[in-house]
Length: 208
Ligand code: HEM
Image 1 (cartoon, rainbow, N blue to C red):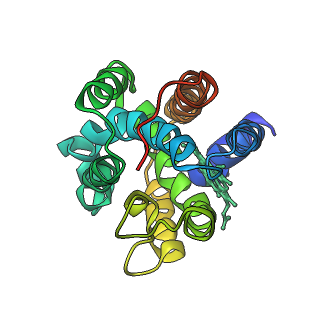
Image 2 (tube, rainbow, N blue to C red; image 1 turned 135 degrees about the horizontal axis):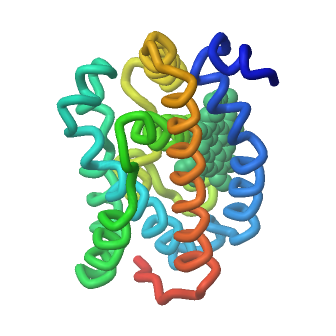
């Protein structure tokens, strides 16, 4: 890709191109850690997701980002994952650890925040597959244990396309685009660290 392309390629496509291999490696790592093999393993997966939701939750409430991305506040899935954690009796102490880990991360500027949001919102696509597995192998659902993986009532694909359209309509400079890529990559790296700590590290998970 040339530097001229960086300006003309829609931001969402650019972010996808810049993170595809990272996503593939993360997706394979998560599946290799068998999150659906038991309730205890799924509890570790939930805590990993909880960290990401805590890291991004403040962004959904930020007026500057809300002005750029219509309907942003409604996309926040922190309440849903907190209910999933309650379903799985994840202890308050563990949830507090995850809240602090999430709070310590996050973007340094608006452009990086767009990248973090791209990564988190994009994960709702893979969530369709994850929900299917959680249902088939563990009996979980949009109303128990896997609420945060549920699709939007208006349709998962449409909801994602609307987010991408909003991203792509923003007049960002080349520098801001580069910052957005940094943000998207940082979000993937944050998740990877959480996966290694919580899913691979044999942390004690609550089980129902
Ligand atoms: C085992 C876990 C995962 C699986 C199986 C998975 C699977 C997928 C699949 C199949 C898609 C494409 C869906 C489509 O185009 O219709 C997708 C998209 C995406 N996923 Fe994942 N995913 C996983 C975890 C994650 C995580 C943890 C993140 C980041 C927090 C993430 C971020 C994304 C992003 C950003 C996209 C959108 C890419 C784009 O089209 O721009 N995924 N995922």
